[in-house]
Length: 399
Image (cartoon, rainbow, N blue to C red):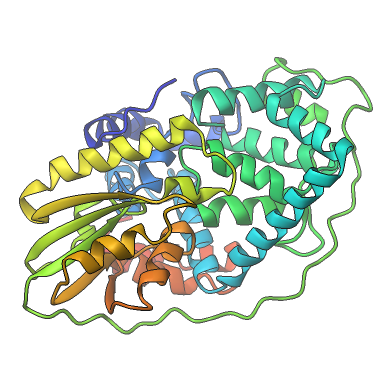
């Protein structure tokens, strides 16, 4: 299973999946089968907006009714919901980062914990299904969504490892590693997102939905774990509805790895220079996989090729922990009348942009899709779900 990091490959995969996005997807989506042909495998492309959520929804609902494609449409909106939820509660991401630092301090001082963590990352725990998924993730950069849930549950409740280390393992290896979807999904499994409600991996469920590939012996998994202790509630910060204003003068554009779509570039302004910002290495304080870094780098190169006539002079900046000021140095070297950045949601990209706003004024360009959908993520997904028809209507997508 490979992911070619180009828009051409993304469109081909979308075209092949669209006929299956209705009732076939609803019936088969929970099965973790080799090759994963029952699901779209579009998430790495959507994560970098090589394909946008809006494009995917238009394609699917151009072929299926909303009722027929409801399950798939909801999966697309789950990613949207997570982003909107975290955008309104950015301290949850910083709290996760602090928790991860604390967990890393523990593995530096607790030999037993370190050995257990290393075994889990290697896929050497003796739990056949878990070990397979750990190796599959490292080898391919991808896991089926159901496997992600099982894996996280086993990590937290059976292996008794800090959830932050598990979320970090995913952030280091997933091609679609996303601050919102990943952090909040791990919190949900652990019982921290919906307080008091955790997700428990069961051997019978794993056997059923892997069609007997993994039959775990009785007693190997913890079957009735308590959710992790609740965290203090987080204050919500409404998303600003103030549209940025652009000067008619030529601009420097900062194009981030969060959004490589043509819609990331504001209409009506001349881009004199583009800084292409790669923050993949900042997903984790540990080493992000070569596969993830190569996918993002190639996707950004493809985007530059596709949009070359709109980008002006292009400079590439790759940030890591040792080069936090590299972006500021590049921007400062050639001052611009105005600087426009594609909107980076909460995560490494937003952190990188925040550092240079101390010395430079930046207009952040948020896509219409996000402006419409994200503010609805005020509570749980099931309340958000009620707004999906309204969102589709405002986007002009027939359902």
